[in-house]
Length: 193
Image (tube, rainbow, N blue to C red; front, side, top):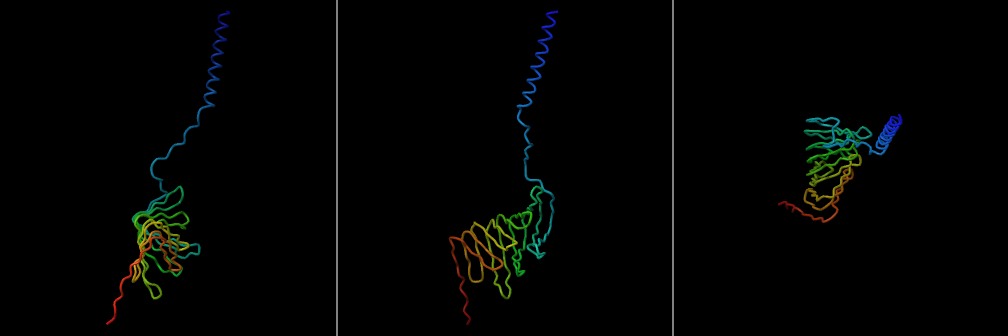
C-alpha cells in the first residue's frame, strides 16, 4: 500500500508539473504573427476606358482625366491611372492638356502625381500665348493650380525654348519658373519684306 501511495503521489506530482509547464509555455510563447501581405495593394474597383471629372469644393471643374485603366486603392482611397490623358483647368477656365506614363491622385484630389514622361500644353487665345512643358515626374496641385518637379524640364513658347532642372509653375498667374541650370534658345523672327 505504501508503494501504491508513492506511485499515486509521483503520478499526481508529474501531472501537476506537466500542467504548470504547459501554463508557463502558454504564457511565454510569442504572439501569433500577423499574416503578411504580399503583392500589390488590392483595389477597391477598376475601370476600363474611363473618363472622370473632378470638381473643386465650389463645384467648379478642377481637372479631367481619362485613360485605358483606372484603379481605386481601397486602403487609402487613392486612384492610379495608366497612360492618362488629362486636362487641368486654371482659375479662368483655361485648359492645360497633357499626358503622362501614369498618374495617381490622392483621395481628396488635392495632389496629382504625373509619373514618367510628362507633356502639358496650353492652347493660345486672345490674351495668352501657347506654351508647352516636357518633363518627368511632375506633381500637380489642382486646387491651387500649381506644378512642381525636380526633374529636367523644357518650356517651349513662341520664339523661345527654355531648358533647366527643376520647375515650378502657377497656372492661375500663367507663370512657369525653371529653378537651376537654365538655358534659353531664341528663335529668330522673320523680317517682313
